[in-house]
Length: 324
Ligand SMILES: O=C(O)CCC(=O)C(=O)O
Ligand SMILES: [Fe+2]
Image (cartoon, rainbow, N blue to C red; front, top):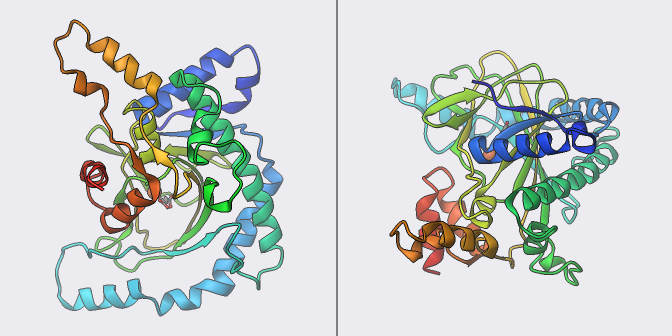
């Protein structure tokens, strides 16, 4: 089994319907798929790879060698146990957002390149959400509207959907059997667009009860959906579990951009989708309460729960936020 690879350029031609169906299938059956011919210039992607790697080498690596994962793994080794280290990931991470001025500044062209990249990826995220609206039978712009606190013209920054870019490097690990690069989780937010290393693998997703490699593919953008899309879609598009293996001899780079709701946004299943479930229930004898599979909540509250429970099953998170 391989994660679906979808030619995004076909969305504009005769094969539009088939491509929409492939994306629907990717969302519904996988929660992960890869886009090729997505329209982000390859030349820009090459620059992104270059500045990220340089930044890691010159501005991050020395600190990683003195970081918590390294000291915790050393302590763990003294216990001479074969058990995996809990509570830490073998990664170096920093976050780029529009309102955080604290971007790495000593790598030539880093800021300009990443700002350009983020602008492109944000457009792609919004396009992907429109495709999901259409595939789910929601009004055009529904998800974006919900993520922007139910407005098309956010007047305050706190109403705006949040677009972040997490730049991760997974340095060579002397004991990859004892620690994860990144422990298994589902993503909290909306749409995630991942530009992963095309040489070094390690990302795996859970399909049914099988962990499957998300195969490195040059200049592809991996799309996956987070918990908020699961709620908005009333469970049609489930967020998929994924994890990253630690690697003994290479550094893996991955750049994950995510389009999330504003912390103030109220999230609940799209009403059109609840109706569809209700109709489907007629005559089957199932309870009408089935229609509403997910609670209505404020995204900031969800994040408070998620921060504490990221690596745990997601269902209790929905339960916890229901009670808030
Ligand atoms: O590094 C990767 O490929 C995945 C990163 C990820 O899952 C995350 O940042 O949530
Ligand atoms: Fe993730």
